[in-house]
Amino acid sequence: MSRPGQGVMMPVNGLGFPPQNVARVVVWEWLNEHNRWRPYTATVCHHIENVLKEDARGSVVLGQVDSQLVPYIIDLQSMHQFRQDTGTMRPVRRNFYDPSSAPGKGIVWEWESDGGAWTAYDMDICITIQNAYEKQHPWLDLSSLGFCYLIYFNSMSQMNRQTRRRRRLRRRLDLAYPLTVGSIPKSQSWPVGANSGQPCSCQQCLLVNSTRAASNAILASQRRKAPPAAPPPLPPPGGPPGTHAVRPSATFAGTALWAAPAACPTEPAQPPGAPPRSPSALSGAPAPGQNNLNRPGPQRATSVSARASIPPGVPALPVKNLNGTGPVHPALAGMTGILLCAAGLPVCLTRAPKPILHPPPVSKSDVKPVPGVPGVCRKTKKKHLKKSKNPEDVVRRYMQKVKNPPDEDCTICMERLVTASGYEGVLRHKGVRPELVGRLGRCGHMYHLLCLVAMYSNGNKPPLPQDGSLQCPTCKAIYGEKTGTQPPGKMEFHLIPHSLPGFADTQTIRIVYDIPTGIQGPEHPNPGKKFTARGFPRHCYLPNNEKGRKVLRLLITAWERRLIFTIGTSNTTGESDTVVWNEIHHKTEFGSNLTGHGYPDASYLDNVLAELTAQGVSEATAKA
Image (cartoon, rainbow, N blue to C red):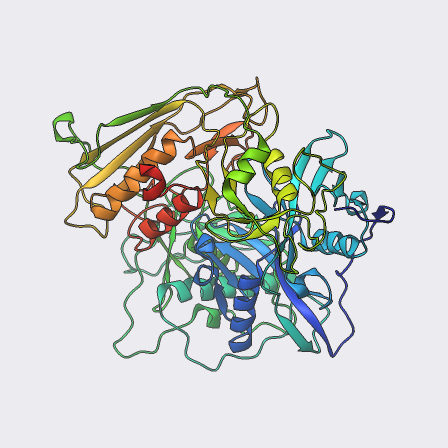
């Protein structure tokens, strides 16, 4: 895509607040561990805005609109995102941009990771790239934003100025971010109105309301100079059994933490018919504009606290490692309890449930083959490099020539289909004229032939030969047989005589993946370098029903095509050059679903079938 003009160094745009009483686009963002504000998707932002209109002091369950965000809740009063299974707290903010900028048009710029996943740029970078793109600059230097990258619009690539490494990038049209009109405070927090309704008594709302109360109490404690804390009085004679005197412990934000040698007993029941109590009432209403915790997450505490006497209505909050001597790693509810106690508020701590990762022991005689699935094991070996397929031949195999193309954009080069390809003069292939247009057979999407040849040629790093498959850049339909970069290993599968939660009358299919450490091949990020394989063998579980066996057969096909794992950077530990999952989710938690990787999960089998289809693995292709 040839663009006239000179490259530019663009300043940061769109971060200031516009004048009052004008339209602006709302983008909700969260602060990551690198101190960068990362935008939520437009769909999630619309959901947050809808909740905000109904209750500015409420909480937003992100999993209601995005299945990948099931563990996350946003508390609108404290302006924090909470991850329920780990207790991680991260600040969030409500940011505003011009309606004519990229988020207002629904334009998203993304870069491709080593594993082939697409990641959106930060919003300020996205807006800067879009501004340069609209002005038809051929390149863009991001050094003014603190990044040593150059963006080349002709090749739609990003290059690291130090390592000279290139990555693909793309411009995608998505839902436009929500639009708001009216006077908005210039700060990231705002006064909230009183909630006149009765507080919900469900356990999740109790936890969120408790966190809200803790946030307000911490802010109040920071605004005043508290005298040195004295130990609380001993429990009265005849108090509940198991209570102990508490002693002062470490300090947290200038307020004393209280450590108890054991957990206090479970709270007494409320009288029948009594209205549910909201823990937020314990600390009073916050002052306007002071409802935002300025404390970056994740936060950890080094001691567990409890009060000697627990009045009725105080919620029982689970905390991990309650009797341990080391640092406590609390879940969301545990962090709530610690913050409440730091403010001197009563709370009852209980043991948190632990995930059940594995079934009870099974003898060899009880392990049976899976009905309808031949064998019990599949092995993969090192990939033997084959002669590269001619890109032109691959593209022509799946496309039909279009004599009179419509006056639409080619979504690869963004030029009109009735004009020459944007790769004219950049890429030359004998027999492929830049004005030729073709239609993909199954999905019907149309592109310049030269653009598809360029996309196929750049799809893999040399010297890795292409596998002869082609993926539609619009709908992701796969033509041919897609293969991956999974290292050599072994996949075993069999029946065990135990049932998964939600499948009481059904035995369980257990899958065991085992991949050893080794040396990366030419298809991997760093050929010749050693890669690690953490956490193997990995055990996964499926119900032994018709759909579960169907998933198993397709997983076997995906394993043989080397699509289950790849080598990249771990999202959990940050370790690079290690074996990671490759966008096909597995259930690794046998008897519970505390981590989101277990059962019951009514939609899991359908979701994993959709993920397999996205990788080109279906019953039709498996039989081919």
